[in-house]
Length: 285
Ligand code: SAM
Image 1 (tube, rainbow, N blue to C red):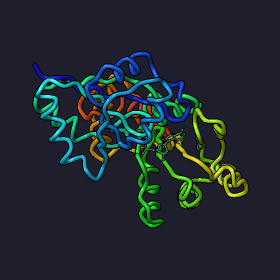
Image 2: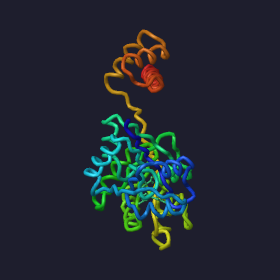
Image 3: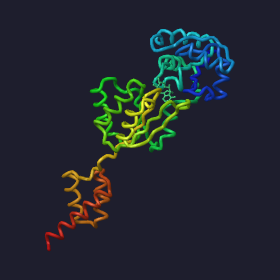
Image 4: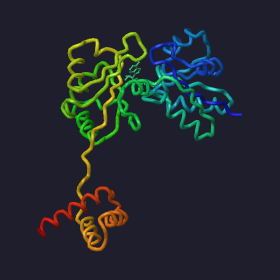
């Protein structure tokens, strides 16, 4: 019988943010694979847990994942944890999870803290759709190219940032995004100095520039989606089809048939049909 791989979320600051299931799992597995064993020891000691630890980080995970796979195949159960939050979210673990799944080993998530989700939940921005961009490129020019591409994104998006780059990132963003664009900075979530600032990009940048405390700690930045210009123009072909249909049918029917034929939005075609009829009436007068 193979063992099971548990992907266990751990606190992002406040050590009390850990589920009963996570604690039970950490207590019961054969080994805990941790990004930094010293770091996870603090958490385990806090909760009176003592289990064998193994280190699995970005520099050894390709090789170490093979070793862990063999242990899983030998029937051991393993908990994968990162330094903070949910493993694999901008954290190590993907090679191990992939290998385990390829080998038909059960991979079970033990959900819990994640800085991204915590920040989004308190952001006040629209969340019916959102995307996560991890850490942004490190050079200013690559970042500006990235921000330029994101102007085409109509949904909320988020990225992780460190204290070293938060100001540079916001500066670069202010060169590309409108100054009144809505952004949220979620800093030091669940910790003593938790701060969540929502406002116009220019105001948030001003605050981070002028308040040194606002450049300390760990950050999630959330950016509102950009409203996209509506495609109101019909193609020549769509106009031609609509005109032909208008000769034979009512405005409503012509718009409906043209929508079926062209795939264009019915409302847009109906408005265009009204405009065409208006133009025609003006010519006849
Ligand atoms: N796996 C983690 C998670 O689920 O959130 C993220 C790990 S990633 C290597 C670390 C980054 O997450 C930090 O640089 C910061 O951007 C963000 N982060 C982690 N903890 C945070 C916190 N308490 N408050 C704000 N951002 C945090």
